[in-house]
Length: 479
Image (cartoon, rainbow, N blue to C red; front, side, top):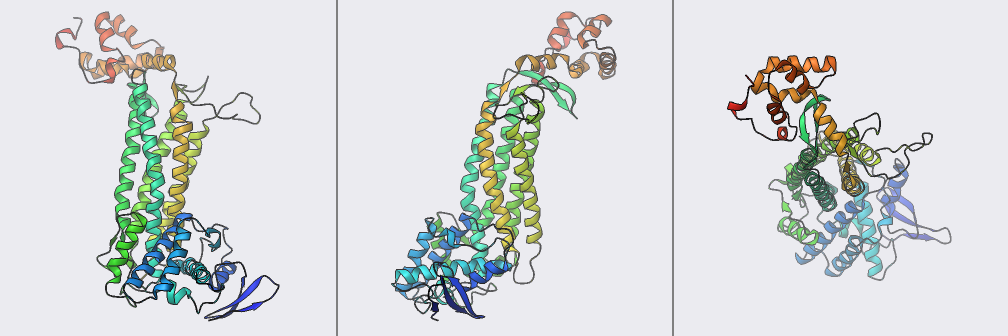
């Protein structure tokens, strides 16, 4: 299939199954990609680097395995492999020009990959772009493959590649929070439930708990990621393996695992792998669960840092930038705000992914481009946001010790510690009187002669109240 060239206008003419199509002379992509660019001028967003690299890894693995099995010319396979390695290394990414919102199943992106690799392979073999008699996008680059098994494999592998950025960011955040937990271990403050006075806690306990929550979310993501390692490559159009060598399926999965350094495995049932994208739903949901925890933590930090004169002001966040265009001296909790907005986006991305996952019909789910875009977008923004939040916010948090201790001594919930000594009903009565009169819990108890001063000092010590323990029974009551 040779193209004809139009001199001087910067285009070459290619032919596909629909007829002739003008393609920019300098482009590595071809006619099908050019049609997609015209059809899908939707968002201006293009495939993520990880998806491009994952697709190139698949093409590299397929070319090498098909050559070894004797079903693809070795010289052509070597040229395709060299072109694929260039793309894996970050070259030619500007040639992947199809919008993320495109034809179903990712056909347009897949043909963009096939055409770029074919034209680069043609050059490697000494030909000119568009001379597909040398290397053909479908007949050679796509030999033994279909969009229906390549794209789902590529998006799963891309997610695993991007997880290499998210996981270290999560570890950093978890460590930063737990380090602050150790640092704040002696800072006593009022706890709050329902945003209302609760028993005293340690600021370190709060921050340790944040770190544990992040670590649990990280573990959930790792568990969900394992399902991404099961791939349907080799199933071709409908899971049957049509047009592949009998040994191709297992060998290409193994080779792709070597190339990507990921523990991949061929699905037991390729038809199931073609029909279902449950793995993407599980992984996206794990990212959403992380986002929910991050929203909660960011909200807590904003509350704890509120003020300085009219809020809780129990902690100070790093000062990063002016907070108002009109109010001088105002400083806002910008990093927690940013993190919350990123997390909101991740929750929305998961909803879009979930809708795409349930939209599969019969032998294929054609909504995979939406799954790929939303999941990879979530991975990228989470990785960047979490790293920035750990470095620019958490590591610089400082406590307001005096404010924390003042709240610890003034919380009405101190009355909770009186329950074992004077009973719940009497303690509740004292708490209500404290709220009504503004007098402290110890003052009211002493006035009523319910406990001695020494007993009160021990029982109502906020520091003692932050861990299990009771005053010995012989010392419970004053009389």
